[in-house]
Image (cartoon, rainbow, N blue to C red; front, top):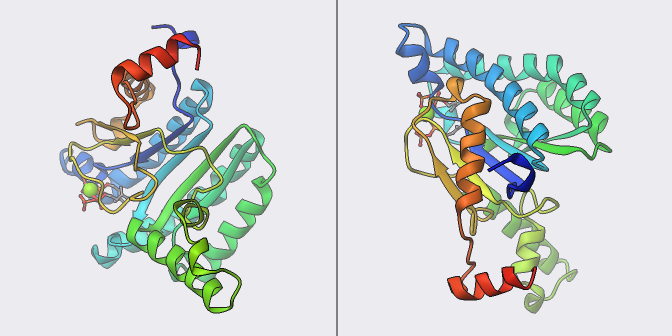
Length: 249
Ligand code: IPE
Ligand code: IPE
Ligand code: MG
């Protein structure tokens, strides 16, 4: 199908997995895979923007990844800092709003400052939103939302009966973006690894064996082609969806 009439997901998230195996299969240190992965981040942002995706959310570092060898964690932090320094101007030039989701309080002061500055610089951009999940966990996200709501109830700013799915949603990361349409995982595993647990409620899932450093524009397009062929029913029947489509809804 041509790009013109293709149904493009508004919000795509990616679990960027397979950097370590990519490097190891070349008898290289895992870190080499992370560096190659950065280039794929770059190309994916460009592809997403060109294909008309409005929000791209990338899982860069999970709350569990701290458990990796210290040497790997520290290289990942350095890489993160380096990429922010090198790339944010380019994002800004391309009209992309940048934000971090996750518990940034565990990062160094320097990194936290860089994150704040990057978010501030790009905050009025409207072409696409790039969210990087760093020290992120889906369970953390639901917990922080619950805590914030509980605080409001305790301070009498909210009544117990005000708590609804919508209110919960309003306190969860990415609440200002379109609902998650497509969740891609590279690297051959079929799991969510504590990523967007709440947000993925009705996302379409796409798994590929391609390792993250090899996930090129063609691979991205294949994921979008697969999305285009899905029938999203949201609990309705296929017939209901079809008649709705016939009515132009
Ligand atoms: C994903 O690649 C990147 C991060 C988790 C930071 P991995 O490092 O998990 O690569 P594999 O899964 O070991 O190949
Ligand atoms: C998920 O990959 C986290 C990121 C891509 C940042 P992992 O490699 O950490 O996930 P598991 O350990 O295979 O579940
Ligand atoms: Mg992995």
